[in-house]
Image (cartoon, rainbow, N blue to C red; front, side, top):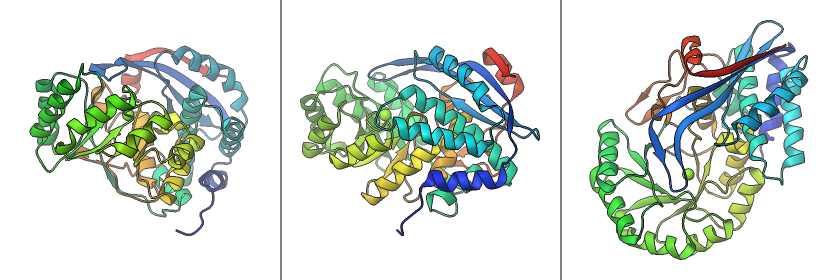
Length: 396
Ligand SMILES: [Mg+2]
């Protein structure tokens, strides 16, 4: 691949060319959307997604929306940070705000500021949505230019999620996903009491999914190195595509990878570009799972994709169970990744009671179409936002 300009610089240049009008209004809707059924992982049970929908409007009345999707327990802090930040955006152009976010990132690169990252990701989404509407382009097209890919993908393959459950329920969930056309099933694991229970669950999912389907595991960092190796050896014959974050630290991931019969992916360890670089340099992962909201947004995701591509390591995107706004942002990033045709874990919208969108992107037979309208190509439904809103604030 030829040397590629930094995606952040490239994107700011495009945004500055098309979106010169200063920002005048910011609106924040705090929404709480329940999950249809709790999503149970090795470390948590998600029952509600609380997010901040941020809508920016420029002096010409063009708007853009993004989702700030904090980790559980950090919602109030996110609301406070955004409230103190909102007035500082007033009168700046979108390119100036993106530049400020970049400066903040370079100051914070080594620190692992999870909250700053989710806020930056949501603001960046809103700015790109607004800039895309002004430029007459889908966000995916703008990002594909910045990533060096050139032309964005029209659709991306997606996996289905099976949360922690007994073997029969897990098998049923996998069977349903495959019947609907899914070719890749990701199973949350790690809560099983012992190797035997773990292997029985994974075997039940493999049998239900059939041979032609990829089965991925995600332990969310639940195991020690020894536990991970014992469990992974017990499912060696089940042709597991990879296991996400079997252990929590980078050194432990590298130790598991060195001896595991199953490929290892890093997820929680990928908190930003520098963290991703550490994972790659430690030889800790065969695959990088990147959550755009965790690493700070689209630009950081494209930076990680570039260093991963240089290392020959595939990148798979996943979510923090955002509503349809955040999922649309992840979809546009997936469509713009520089290389690879991985199956991404970004079709998690059905886990929630509502996606808050007037019309959702088409999901069919394991693929999601990238909306081809301007910006993110989606609109939130005022009725649905009102139904799930906890509070709202407009500035000024
Ligand atoms: Mg994961």
